[in-house]
Length: 369
Image 1 (cartoon, rainbow, N blue to C red):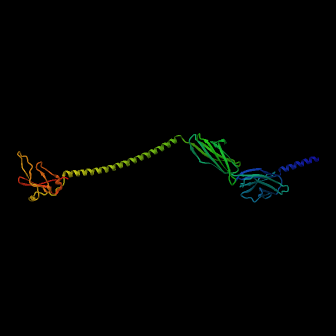
Image 2 (tube, helix red, strand yellow):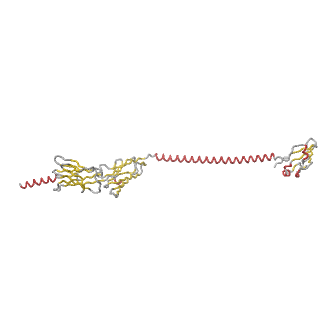
Image 3 (cartoon, rainbow, N blue to C red):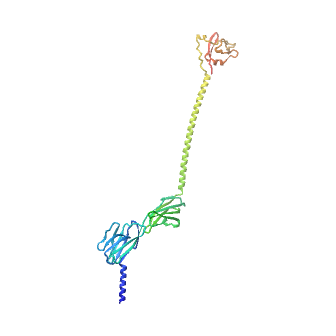
């Protein structure tokens, strides 16, 4: 009998030990800014429940009055049922630290050290970016893409997908650096041969994220004709520039030729005018300033007197010179010529008088220079 009582008492004590105080979940991992929730359940009577984060008191709950001193960052929700008393602790803004934090639930009076703990890990979600944005390349080209993930804790996992299909890790390289604040920055480089228009994504994730953080770019394949069109456009522009330059050069040359021709024609005209003037002067000669009209007083001027007569048959004969002109003007009776060298010497006296039939006649002489 005594043995049966001992066994029953031990079973009761084990039952009480299992159900007295339970804190769930035992481990919580969350992101900074994401609420963390813990529930403390007890199957026996208690007066006061105290919540702590490491050694810092968070909240006190009275069995009769409920939570004492709730705030925006910490509050409690009654989750009790008929068989057990349960309260949920809600941390709305858990503080980020690089270490695991301990959440403690304690029942008072604590004569039996009724206390239980759980672990809290707060993670940091950073940013992720594929550099360069959307791009267009030739089909078959080797494309290099770079993804940067900054401000993460702990070290995140990084992966690539092309059109929704995961890229093998051997096709990209990833490096990680820890900054002064304890956060991690990652750089990943993917090299891929373009075989068509693709949708490329870089995915970064920590355990607290339900879905990875991602950055996406579109890689389009340029039509083969684009380069030819560009080359043709450049060639057309170059031809137009060359034609314009050639036309400008021709215009300049034509204008310069016209000016030269005008100058040459003007000189020719001047030469022609000079020639005509010289010819006219040669033909017309100069005006004899010593000529005077026939007047009764002409006989008073120095003159040549030439006696003329007709030869038999009515042919006039050269009259004989009866007087010598001034400045030794000589007339040869034999060849009837006049020495013009002496005439040029004194053009002012180039006149003489011919006496024909007894009538003196003044003859004007033109001297050509």
